[in-house]
Image (cartoon, rainbow, N blue to C red; front, side, top):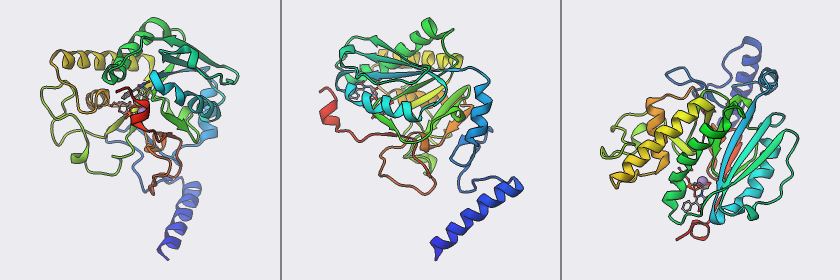
Length: 297
Ligand code: 2GW
Ligand code: MN
């Protein structure tokens, strides 16, 4: 009976939002306290927003790292991205790998480009994970200036299952981590040691953001990668490593530089079988992986 009531409440809310222009989602916050939108299914009209961005001739750079055994994730990532990610818009993937010969041959659509860049193999996973900020900063500074308008930096052990489109564009864009969207702040796994540059005082912070997806305009993401890299270097010099590595530094950056748009966990789910009421659609998700098998020792 409660289920039936919830169902009819959802229908009434949808009808009301069409007829009276009322907010479509009342079960989630769709705006932050600093008035940045939080993108949830039902908060935007995809046809309308596509038509607005269609007039702008934009290019979205998308960076990916696949070192060591992580090249095995590329096929699913690229094939699913071609199906769901900025469909109808110009996308340029920049793929960093230590094995260009292991890149699968995926057929890309019109106005979709892939540039493969060889990087040295790294064995310490900390170097792979944290070296990304340095490489991203250099890519943006040296190559992207006249090549792209926006950039997204994504983990490769992932796959698209639904639309990820122009509704995600903004100056500085963070994605709420799927484990922390409906928990109190004291649960957030920020870095709480003062000695680290990623330090956030207990009881502070806004949201807990994932390190697996972030983006924005070139200028804003350049500043983000530059700052995170500097802070990571200071930590390295002091022999301290933040609890969740560059994700901790990203969270510190977003605390002091508020994102202009947030994406709900629809845009980075953790396991396709994990369920939650507010998440009506899974657009992008980490795939289940056997860490012992894919990570170097
Ligand atoms: C190897 C050993 C241990 C951890 C990672 C790696 C590794 C990572 C690798 O051998 N090859 C490689 O290409 N990577 C790249 O780094 C790849 O793009 C991968 O998606 C990304 C992050 O590593 P991942 O996906 O194993 O880490 P997660 O899924 O636990 O990610 C979260 O935490 C990380 C920091 O601990 C990052 O912040 C990441 O962005 C988060 O999603
Ligand atoms: Mn990952």
